[in-house]
Image (tube, rainbow over all chains, first blue to last red; front, side, top):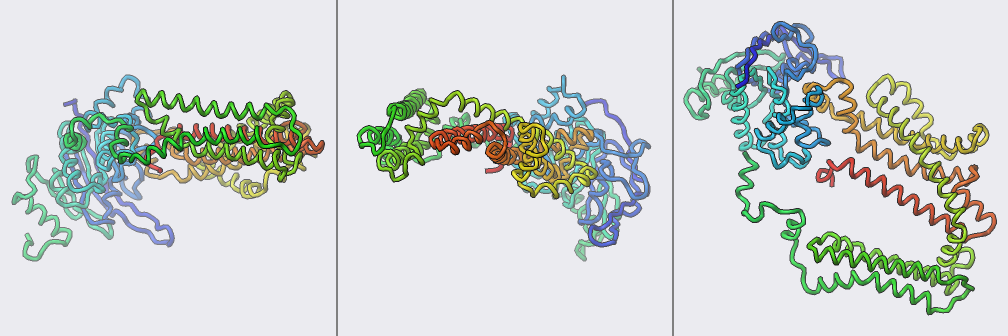
Length: 260
Length: 353
């Protein structure tokens, strides 16, 4: 739709360690990760808990800085969060003291751009079909509605990079499948770089043009699989099952007979 | 979209429901007995009011009673006010608005109890003297003296209000600044926390003797005491409020482009608002205590002083008149604060309840 900006996101030899709270020990959440991602890709980060997939997202968002290595967008190092890199969290984290409309307009307001852009907010409300809840407070929304609001709250900045940190993790199975299609639709329209963390292998394959498989202790990338299948994808097709087996095998969850 | 689907599943005529209609749909139809009971309860305060009037007029007095019509007039005004309110509610009901009459019905037993209480008090004081006159004066005495001494009583009331609000607002303003700064900045907390820990546990009344010696003006001293108590309550409440802000809100706001300043004013403070307002309410009750102690012990004006002064002259009726005045002021002030709190925190409706 809109003129899209091509960005290249690179992680160069990135490691991140956290000091434990009680003891003197240090956990290595990420160990020497090298990745390059481009606009137009939908990247699924999948892996068991503790593999550092959320850490990667938070590094890209600029919420934390790497212990060693560099995270760069178009060669420029990321030092702080920016609305150019919109992030959706597992919890909707809507501000409970603002109405749905004010939540969606929050980002524009913070940047002093709300005046004259009210129609943008209204458009976003239309996109998620919550016109009737425009003046409601987040406490009155269901989980799925709240997560939709959180999604468009970041999308209103038209970010070049969309970071999704298990955005569907807390939703029920049906809402989840609906939202998967909604997110795909939004992404297809703009063709930005989307990076989604998930621990659901099916979701990763269903949505991703590229699935990055990670493992824990220390957090590292074990496999980088490109999925060239067209959308919408069939969850029960042969190729889908093949991808699923391949990924599960990489994570040592595959059945013995299915070894590829 | 899920919202549209659920709408489609509902019958067409329930699509545009108001809250009132919804409640009517969901509550069971009242039985005939219940409806008669409701009418009786609505009439009850009126009957109790009449009973109070009869009690006052027809039971012989035990002690002399000058100007007997003041209390009678007050009773009649109260009963008439209740009647007018009832007529208003009935008119609203006819216009299709049930909320007023429901509220009326809900409050009716309380009003009835109020009239009964007045009658019982009058019986115990004026009629039988179980509560000895003039130490516990009957309502008629109190009303009479309040009217006779109205100019001075009003002056004292205004003085109390001025002192209360001056001290309270200074305390709350300074408390907000310190509390929010300390909640947000570790460095400020390092310096202010010891002060709070050291001065906090001291009841504000303890300062009065010191203030009386040190302060150049008693009014200024009293303002200081009241402000100190309010400051403490607001500081502690807003500090904990800000410290307890969920980190994920900050993270979300940061990725949405909020600056450091906006994180404080657009995220931290609104999030801490329930706690801050809680502190303001607490500050008001602490201010009310402090002002009474200050006026009774040192300041030579205001309702507290009026009470102490009336007691020293053995004018117990004046003492009670001042007491009622204090009750009214504090009730109104608390009510107003509560209204403000509800308005500011309307987003909590339905979440906390």
